[in-house]
Length: 235
Ligand code: UTP
Picture 1: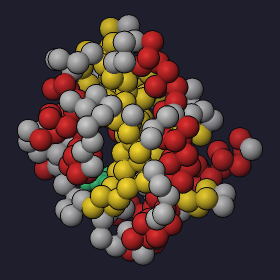
Picture 2: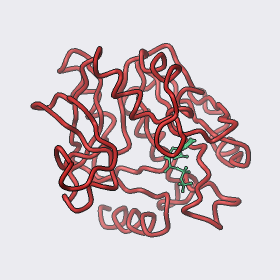
Picture 3: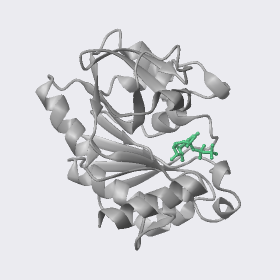
């Protein structure tokens, strides 16, 4: 199993600091947030970790360079998460961990791998339950049991098929890259990973796994503050 960590985004919600410091490199304790995510991928069993970066985010490369299981790939234009993942194409089952989504309190990726093994190595999407009034911020799952039937991007509370939200972690078969290659731009003109996964659902079973931790979005100052608070309160 390989891991891909997309960390090539502009970080506009965290300007001006992201003009020089990638948000993924902001410290959580004495380590960059990204290192905690790399550690999570390693202990979940990934034998290679591909970091997707962009020009101007060389600090990431400098920090992780020389680690034998880490490889760097550049996304030249920020055409969306799906596009970032495609730049790192691997020929294996793949764990995708968003570089600005920190999960504290459990190893979400490891638990997802164990869950997949119990379900015939099926695809697993890491999820968390969110308050109904906040569903419009997330990709929301339509499920039968744990099996994913569909995903709805940013629904209103009335439209939402559940309160189960996509939360920064995916375990997918290598087939996802075929879907990404033929994926047309969606919301915001970006190649969306969610759109490719929805097409994949017709042929590959996928399960929603609600991990016991809480996803912290460190892509904006308030989310980063909450992540730090959770980190020190957990310790
Ligand atoms: P976000 O949409 O949260 O990141 O993507 P962003 O584009 O950097 O954020 P804003 O809107 O400008 O503030 C989630 C993760 O996917 C990566 C980001 O680096 C982040 O870790 N990403 C996103 C890419 O690698 N490439 C992209 O084209 C988009």
